[in-house]
Every structure is written in structure tokens, then in C-alpha cells.
Length: 361
Image (cartoon, rainbow, N blue to C red):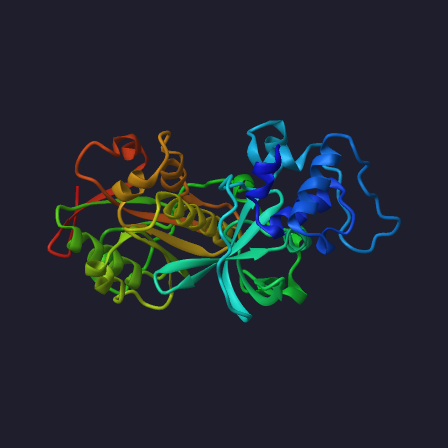
């Protein structure tokens, strides 16, 4: 960890790191002072400050260096139990105040942000780590937050609701964890408003693959499936939204949570959005609700993924019928070529899309 690496962090992430490192009164210091004090403590030139009382936000001893966690895949990274979806702290550029809603992303052990929808894109707001620890926030949590101004920048100042649970009734220690929830064999049929879909016998907790040659027909059909389904929660993922296909998204009813990015966005931004959608589905299942995740389409996700296809793998394997929990059902528009052949074995049912209708393969 050197000066240049620390200088890349936002002032808020730097202050949080300074608190963890043991810098005295980090909020009263400028960026250069914070960097200097952090480096002096890490190099042993200064002793970390230890407060005499429990007031304020004292540094906690987690047994590893937070500076290392920010930049290295070390044992420290493994020791941290929360999801880390990105190594780089995103730019916090949302400029407003008041009450707002959005999705939490835990960026690193000392940095988190709130992704807020703005039409078909997202803006990002910094969340102080003290709030993450206070409520045990996870990536994918949907929160209502009150915003504040600090040093001329908008940040999350307080949280009033987490996953539709008022803070007064929220108990973080009673939260379930997707990883610990056992998958059972799906048995409950999804009910659709359209009788033709009910005849397909699609079960909650299944992976449903859709194949079609017409991209517009594919998009329209998967949206119709979502709108018609009885699932209490619905997620739609599309990483290549352009002006010409926005009209199809207008057909989506208000119950669908959109995780979309423009075709002109960077791959890194699109990766954030897909990861958010995956974790959002897990949080919904943990609360006992049924959610359908519609991917339009898998080839586009592969296109923004890393070389190891880790994001696509996580997405395609998220399906689950949770014992004493909710369900995650996957509707995925699949490519006609071999680019997604790795995932064929995960399909529970396959359908061909032709002229807005589905035919069993």
C-alpha cells in the first residue's frame, strides 16, 4: 500500500480506512494528512490511536490490515465474510438530498454504496461503513435512506427501511443466508394470467431456457412471461439497452425490478448491475418470497463477463427452491450457438420462441 493507491480512494473511503487503521479524528483532517497518518501507522512510525471510551467510531481489530484488503487477494480478503463484488471503489456522483431508495453494494470491507435508479441507468451514493455494520447490510438489500451532505457531497445519513421491513422491527441477527438454505425439489406450479403459459407446467425454483432467432420476439416474450406470472417479486436483467429496444421495456409492469445498463456503458458498470441483480434475488429468497429472474439475454451477459465467466456462472446457478424460505426461478433467453453450452445441463425445461408463442423442445 503506497501513497498513490491511497490517493485513488474517495475521501469517505479514506476516512473509513483511517478509522480502522487508528488515525485520530479522521473527519477533521484533509486527504493528504489522512494518507500520511495511515502510512505512518502501517509502517510503524506512529502508534494507532485507541479511544478511552466507546463514543465515536473506534477502529476495530479484525486481525488483518484493511489496507491490504482493498488491493490484494490475500488471506485477509478471505477473512472478510461479506460479499466483495468489486475491488475498485466506484465514483460517488449522485447529487441530491432527502429520502431515496436503492440497492446496497458492499464494495470492500471499508466501502459500500447505494445504487439508485435513474431511468434505465443507476447512480451511486456513498454509504458510511458504520451503517453497514449497524444493520448488517448485504449486497442486494433494498433500502429506504435519508441523505445528508458532508463536505459538499451527498451520502447516506440514515436508513429507515430494509427489504420492506421498518427499522424499528428489523432484527439483523435473525436474517437467513442464501448459502445456508437447503435446496429442495421444486413442486409448486407458477400460475400465469395467460392460460397458454399455465399449460407449460413451469415450477417455482426451476431454470427455464428460451431459444429464439428474433431478438425482438425474445424480449417481448420474456416480458410477457414476467408480467403474466404470479410470483410476488420479479427481476429483469438486460445489459445492452439501446434506444431502439427501450420501447419493449415500457411494456413491463410496475412490479418488475429493472437491472439494466446501456449498450454504451462500460463492461465494469454492467458487471456491477448483474451482480446486484444476483444478490438481490438471494435477499428476496431469504425473506421467504418467490422471485423470477428474467435474463435478456445470456449471450449479452457473457459479453461483459470476465475471462472465467464467473458472473454468468453465478447468475445461471442462482436458481433455488429454498427449504423454509422463498424460491428463485430463472427465465433465460439462450443463444442459438455454442457460447453458453456450459450451462445446458442446468436447464429444467427448454422452450422455443416463435411468433410470441412457446413450444416445448
